[in-house]
Amino acid sequence: MDYVAEYQSKLRTADEAVRIVKSGDWIDYTTNLAFPELLDAALAKRKDELTDVKIRGNLIFKPIRTVETDPLREHFIYNSWHCSSYERSLCDKGLCNFIPMIFRNLVPYYRHFLKVNVAMCAATPMDRHGYFNLSCASGVAKGILDTADVVILEIDEQLPKVCGGFGQAIHISDVDMIVEGEHSPLPTVPLHPATAEDRAIAAEVMKMIPDGATLQFGIGGMPNVLGTMMADSDLKDLGMHTELCSDAYVSLTEAGKLTNARKRYMTGTGLTGMAFGTEKVYEFIDENPGIAFMPLELVNSPEMIGKIDNMISINNCIAVDLFGQVSAESSGTRQISGTGGQLDYLTGAAMSQGGKAFLCMTSTFREKDGTLRSRIVPTFQGDIVTDPRSQAYYMVTEYGMVNLVGRTTWERAELLISIAHPDFREELIRKAEDNGIWIQSNKR
Image 1 (cartoon, rainbow, N blue to C red):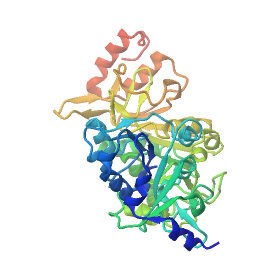
Image 2 (image 1 turned 90 degrees about the vertical axis):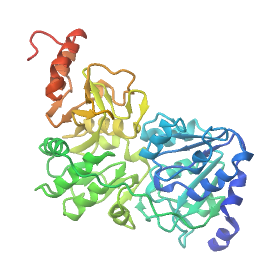
Image 3 (image 1 turned 180 degrees about the horizontal axis):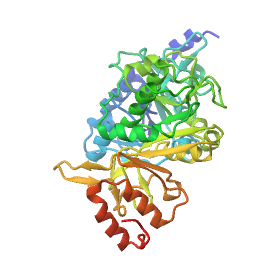
Image 4 (image 1 turned 120 degrees about the horizontal axis):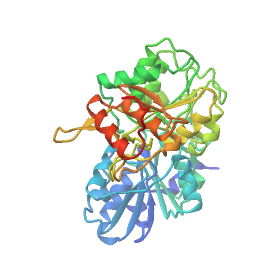
């Protein structure tokens, strides 16, 4: 087969490729570094010709031109499965709608329920076998492309080429059009310096991690703080099984801590589905046979996670109420991020022999006007519940760590108040009494 000739026959300019889009179509941009910026810009230029074009994406860090050029949403309606900070700003302006999901179910949603008229996805240049690597989006991109009526690939030579078991590449025979062109630099997610509260929270979690543990780090600053602390610790033979490969795993590898030697599944190999972070992350995953990218249907399967001994899941959250309900994605009704894979790993780690699931947060935050607020609240007032109270396990703040498993409502209230900021504890006790979850034997 002459793959070069087939490639040339499918080569289009971005402007030519987006002519396939019709009013009313559903378009998909897949996720993170696979965002097709050239095709998006070309589609934005067709604004006045189109109406009711719906677009799905998630964790996109670069400006989305179809959104930016249509502030009244008369032509393009953008929707996100999981908000990056940029997409959050679009939500705040009324320019993005959120789509609830759990990451392990994302591709099955497409396969069984959703329509994709045109999928647009950035990928690496074609190899000699006719394959394009789906890079940092491998956990979901192939599954989405498989459901599309039309597949357009946008070639970005900057993308790292990742290794994997399956789902990390698409063959030219499954591609309808190819677009080339110059791209802006790959987006990076900077590391934020650790605060005293971050270090205190990380120190609590560190006490619970054994040698040979397999780690899942969620999105946020806390995982990178822990990664640095673990890199400087005496821990050894740590493993990686995570939806997101971030800088924490780079630090652990450089320190010789991440060997994957004791993992029961894919021993010797770290498993992930997506990646973003600093440039070091992209260098780390590029053609690295020690890191395998696979579909999130597998990576985030609680049944699979549960088969891994000493599975440690570490995620951030925004707030918890005294009943143990956890919000990790909204502040009130304001969308901050998304459910992502947090519930997948809470469930899976609880099924693991020796497994533990930690939800971490600072005890307080400040409003824009400087007002100090507690993250431990009596009850939620419109906040989206990411994790039901039946699946809340270890909760950690800078004031300590508690385990809510099997606890009564009054025990949960007592435990959570014990790790709240001292300035809010008396008020929380009064609210607990009002809600009937504080009894005489509770400690004061």
